[in-house]
Length: 119
Image (cartoon, rainbow, N blue to C red; front, top):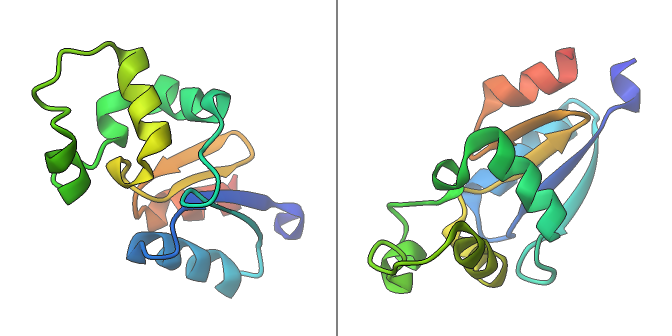
């Protein structure tokens, strides 16, 4: 049954957490659809799914260099504005964003990834 599972991994090739997710699923022979956010921004609808589940702040890498440089902490902007910025600057996200079926995870989350396989 698990052999049919396919996961979508949104991340960047430079992100060690993204590579950890890829390795996790490859070791378990799960088909991965990798979306390199450096080459293609995440679709707004896809991003909304993660925002609805975790809230926008949970998706942001608040301790990252990109966040610091973006001045997002100081900008008065709407959630819409932040979403637009995230789509333009994927480094603002806690990567990877992983979707397996209806299960979503943010960041390096082996327990969440395992739940996708068990689900």
